Length: 334
Picture 1 (cartoon, rainbow, N blue to C red):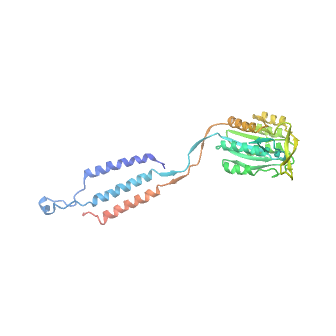
Picture 2 (spheres, rainbow, N blue to C red):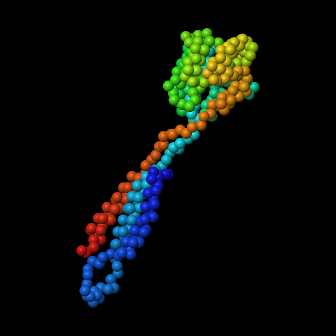
């Protein structure tokens, strides 16, 4: 519980002083007598307590109104936070080769897309105050999730990304990078970055990767590139053995255009990484997390539940009751 104007609560300290001064002054007499002998027979009459009761109502009403003026409210969120001020778009390759299972986690084979999903999930959970968006690309590129602070929504869309969502036969690196850049073009923030993950070469799309890199450079968008996959050959699942039920693999060459990915990173001020092991993949995102930290203060909306109506109503009610009683039941003689 907080108060919009807490300094007004100091007026509560004035009420006892005013009540004391009121008592010192005393009430004017209802009748004036030239001699006390005239009222000798009624000297033993006790003083009525109605006056004290009426003043108690007035002090209580004034106390409630003062508290109401201080604007009591229930606050449901913080007003300011320190955020990193970074907007991030992650571009993920959904081409068919991403099903190659050249990573191992806990003694089990994991394909490239699932490995990328696992490390990206941990990365997003650490960047709770950053806006993050998702772009997926293969033969074409599309926006999987807009820039958002709602990371639960973002992670739901990340889990929905699957090979075959779009035509997976080719890889349009330039289109994927261009789509990511377009999401950041109109955004005003201290730092804008793209994390591009791919396991192949650009063989589709109308925009060359280096042309997209030049656009990123002009817009001051930093691009981190990650080549996904082991070196040499990688095991790609082709089905299951009908007798044993085990997955059947065939070895396919790993063909990552590291030269282009390196040039994209160099041109935009980012860095190129090769993720050829599960632990290396995690190290890459941990390093990017450390590099992209820019503290700034961010205002957030604060939701209040105002309580002053619950004080004003009884305060005015008591004040009205006191006035009615003073003019009716407890009315003094003129």
